[in-house]
Length: 126
Image (cartoon, rainbow, N blue to C red):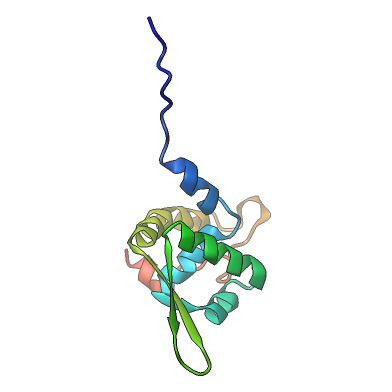
């Protein structure tokens, strides 16, 4: 019997590198909770993330097609981030994981605060 030389390419391979980054899912959740968010709003919500890390992660999420960036020709310049259709699908998929995390409370000595697990009323209604 001949072995197949064709390898199966898993669709998760490219995406998992992006969403597996340390803050990616929290950024997706923060944008999903707001609908649209400016960089400063994300920094305020995700106080534990450095500006460079947030910027780099947003760029990668854009490249992966999960986040859209919209620039406005205003003074001062304004940029808003929102989820794409794929990003929204991912956000809806991670809500149960976030709820599970919050339900664990301080399991393993970790506490979930509003800045570390952003679960707004919009998500709680689902």
